[in-house]
Structure formats: C-alpha cells, structure tokens
Length: 413
Image (cartoon, rainbow, N blue to C red; front, side, top):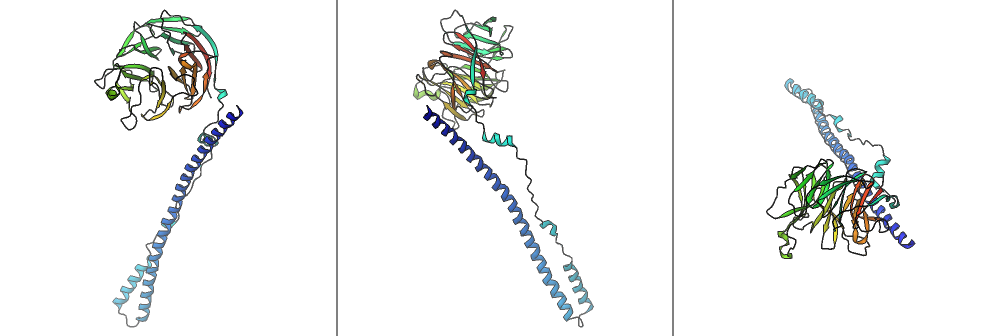
C-alpha cells in the first residue's frame, strides 16, 4: 500500500511540475512579446533620429558652402546674387525637424500581482477524502412491475420523481418515502427530466417528447426530423440554456457493419418547442461517429455534454463532448471485476461526474475532464446502483432491488 501511495504521489507531483512548466512557457512567451515591443519602439525611434541627423548634417554642409561662397565673393557679388544666397541661407536655417517625435514613447505599466490569480493558474490540490456521501435515508420503492429498473429525477432537496421502467405512472415521493403525488402517464417512460416543476419524458418506442405538468396535463413536443431515417428519442436532459438535450438512435436495432453509416446515433440540442439548435453525431473529421448507442445524458456546468454510450449488450462508456462538438474524452471504467455498463449519471456543482455501475455495485466519481478520481459508493454502501439524481447536496440513488437511498453528498467547496 505504501508503495502504491508513493507511486500515486509521484504521479501527481509530475502533473504539477508539468503544469508549472507549461505556465512558465506561456509566461516566458508573454514576457518576450512585451520585451520585443519595448525594443521595437527603441529601434524605430533611433531610426528616426538617424534620419533627422542625416538631414541636419546635409543642411549644415549646405550652409557652410553658402557662407564660404558669400565670403569669398563678397566684393564681386551682385545685389541679385546676394539676395538669392541670403534667401537660400534663411531657408536652410529654418529647420523643419521635430526632434520631440524622436523621444522613446513606449512605457511599461506593471499590474498588481494578485495571489488569487496566481493560485487559479496553478489549479488546486484537493483531498479526495473530503468528497463523500453519507446515507441519510433509505426505503423500498414498491411497484407492481417485475422490471426493477428505476428512474429518478429530483425536484428539490426533499422530493424526487420515481418511476419504474415498465410503469405507466410517475410517483413524486419525499425523503421520508411518502408518496405525495402519482401522475398517470399511460405510457412506458424511457427517460425523464424536470422542467418547470413538471417532467419531460421520452417513451418506449415513441417518436416525440411528452411534458407532464404538476397538475397532470400532458403536452407534446414535436420533433422535426432532419432526415428520412427512423430515429427515436431515448435519453433526455436539461441544457444549461433552458432547452433540452436528447439522444436519438435508429429504431432498427440490428445494424449490419457494412450498412452502419446508414443508421444514425446522435444527440440533439433543442428548444422546448422542438427547434433543433445543434446536432452532435460526428467527430471533427466529419466521418467518425461519436456514438454507437447514446443513452442517458446530461450537460455539465462547464457546458460539456456527458453521454452514456452503449457499445454492446453488456458494455458501455462515458463520452464527453464539448458544447461546440469536439470529442474531449472517453471513459471506459477503472479497475473493475465486471464489464463497465453505466446506466445513469449526474454532475455536481464543481463539475465532477457521478456514474452508476450496477454490474460492479459502484458509483464512479470522475473529474470534469473524465479522469477517474475514486469510487464514491461501493457495494457496502449500495448494491446494484442503477439510477441516480443530484440536487445540491441531496443525492438519490436507486438500486436494481428497487431500494432508494438518499445521501448527503459533499463535493469540494
């Protein structure tokens, strides 16, 4: 254990040193550019001085020649010649040279060295032991369905929408496990998110998005297809701008490898009225697909889009895409006994990413960049975590045995 700790410490120190060297390199570049501006002004001003000096020397020689000529020809010079020489002499003596323009003009103005800014450049050292979740409540969620997959979506710190995959109802329950409201949808929910205290949800086999108000009325968001292929909405989440992020897959599940380009797997950023703002389907080359089976998703506070991507019937990965559409990182698990098959995710206030992994009875905690930090919850805290939802410090986790646990989640300040 000591050896492993020493290796990890050395690895983190190397990361710090690397980042320090990158900062020094950038600061050196900034210093060199400003130093070059100071030297450039000196060079330009000295060139002006050289030009003016040359003009003065030339005029001086001309004045000396005229004076010498007038002195030598003083007795024989005609009045007209005298006047012309005096005129030329007067013109030469009237120096049209602004030497003030030759003064060095660039000044350096230093700024106050702000310790906070310097600290922010270096990033932070944080203790993973300070990130954790303490169980505050637990209850059995009873349904009539034999399918035990749960959907959770927190309304606030004390209330959460709970739904079974095969249920037509969505229950609003509080932290004491009391059902406050049952909303009859009449359709099997595929995924859901909270909008204006109600929920927007996708349905099994459905081609539209439904919205259920707290009063129980249902409205439909029609999705204008951008292609002729039969794509269906799967996962749904809020976007940071108040709209929606929706994952889509082609309804034809069996795809021949030779025909895979004919089938679409994508994420759409859209308004609450169904207008498409942006589509995420390909990597920067415009040909390599980002997803094989995009499922649940969410947008981080740093605007990155985090998508759980099913790569086979029993494997998956987390794909992190920038808001502009660039692939940032792919996470495929860390030190696992079973295949990584993530089923739900959430992002905390510091942009860390939480992912459920029921096959390994783990909740993974990742950095905003997708780097593995630790297992937030293990089997002794919660077995078979399937669904999760986070509201401030209230973390709700549902298991494959339909047990709902509520944790007090502490992220970094």
